[in-house]
Length: 391
Image (cartoon, rainbow, N blue to C red; front, side, top):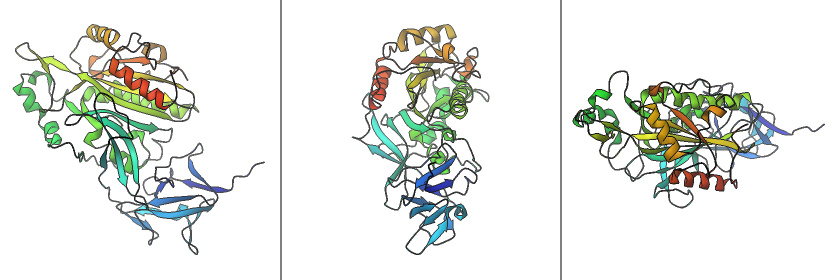
């Protein structure tokens, strides 16, 4: 019988007050199969309480080094030992996320600029990344990449305080004002009949907050580096059902975690009151995407797919179907994998919920050259040439 000599830290039962645990490399640590975070004997890590206070006091809120002893017992210094189960993070403020341009370590397509979003909070002042992505300068996110595991929606008991900001250094105007005042712009373009109290545009998060365990990770999603305009019924409809289905699949089956890429493709348009086809913009620079797409890949089992949602409820399904098969992917496999991927809540009969499609992660079927390049690069990073579509 093999006995594990090390530590198990429970961050699920009191997620609202549990300290943030960072690996020695300065990255977020996630629970293992039993719901706890495991460390080996004498393995080092750090805990943090950014914007708050530790109880007991005296620990460094921006990163306190510690060493695993056994069970929940940790060593802070030569003579100080504590029980992790008794350490809480109280009076926690919620610091603003930092969005940092990255020009070399992230490969971006179509002339977009790489970025990473997160916080400088570890004791060694290392940047702790929540998600990465590629951004169209002076425009909208191209795509965002994040990790997802089965614990993301477990043990949460803290309020969300959406504070959309944008501190990306190459974004030089007030994009929030565009989101708040787009209805006036629609009226100027003769598009006012499409917007009302029931159907309107909202800030659609590419990496949704519910895909993350820790409060700081969730807060980081409320940033315009992670947002593109979505119709509210699309956001709350089939796209939400897709996100929920992926989590349900992870929670119900022992398939490890998932790597997610979520992005936008093409721009939406509608005919105005004069019959002219008008590109939808909520401001002079921010376009409304026609398509949202999501690559979902499960590296432990080497399977995945890319999903597409149509973000325009005023277009006939016949035309949307034809566009998908003609311009995006030669094969729609959504119906084939709907049951196996636990996506039965998706309703493809209602245009306001967002028509949803799926394509294999195989460039043989993918027609759109930009999506093909993204998939090729994504699989190349994983040393995979193609992927299956079933668990």
